[in-house]
Amino acid sequence: METKNASPILFEPKLEFMKFSLIPICLVFILVIAMAEANEPKAGFVKNVSGKAFIERNKVVTAAKVKDMLRENDILVTGNTGSMGVILQDNSVMSIGSNTRLVISKFAFEPADEKLSFIAQIKKGTVVYLTGLIAKLNHSGVRFETPAATCGIRGTHFAIKVEDPGN
Figure (cartoon, rainbow, N blue to C red):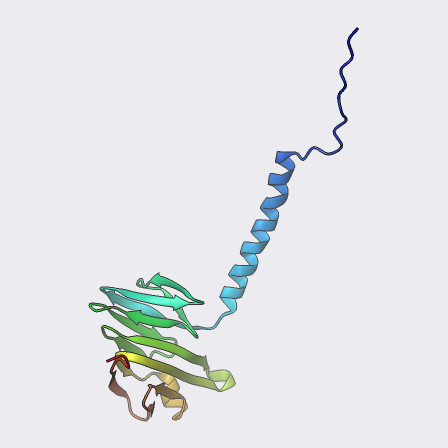
């Protein structure tokens, strides 16, 4: 009789076990991300888009689409033929023209807690703004900053154009 010299297998991972153990881990990870995003304060949403328009969030750039939610620290960018209409949570309306780069630096709209502020940085381009409740309830609560000046809003609407610093 011939005997085979077989070495004993100490550990043999089973693919099925690994699949089933990774699924709950992935689901928990997705849930944690979704909950963190849900807790981020929403500044507003995109009402309309024309041409090339983008939202940059956490260094990730995506094409802007109607109904996209906007958050604090989002950067709104339009190309040569792009424009974007935005409605903020306090019913402010912004129209963002072509070749514009605007940062939503701060947005707080919690009237019950008296947290009312909106600060935007216009790096370049054109913005038309119609005030909402923040400006009505907190007269110094809205501010637009540009490379050359800061504009506090006391009226109901304005238009501002910032030349490209590279030109």
